[in-house]
Image (tube, rainbow, N blue to C red; front, side, top):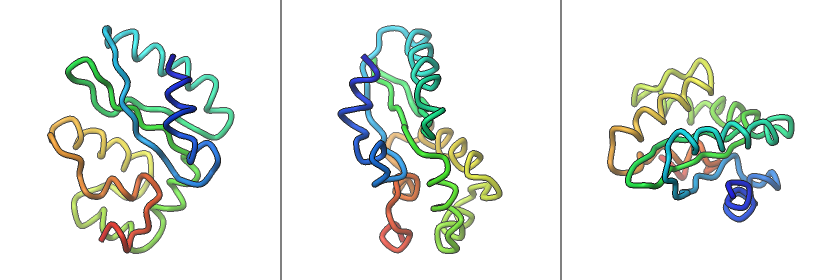
Length: 127
């Protein structure tokens, strides 16, 4: 089931047109959802992709599918890095930025504006 969501919601990322895509999936058991994401990662990681649960609440999970190599390139941009550093992101590694974003999403009810940098939007547009 999760694979269908990835195909429908993440086509631009699968086609290398975007760095990442978030999408929501319904779940009844958090443990099963995490198991499904691990199974998905066994298939997509060798293809240069990664899936992470970003937020879970109300029977829905927000999943982020992205290309780590593209995210590393995107966040290496001087403007992107300075934008993230100015709001407290640890910019020495893209993975640490993703972890910071996940923590922020779990405590905030709204999407932080900087999420565009994690989806492949130009830093000038995010600014």
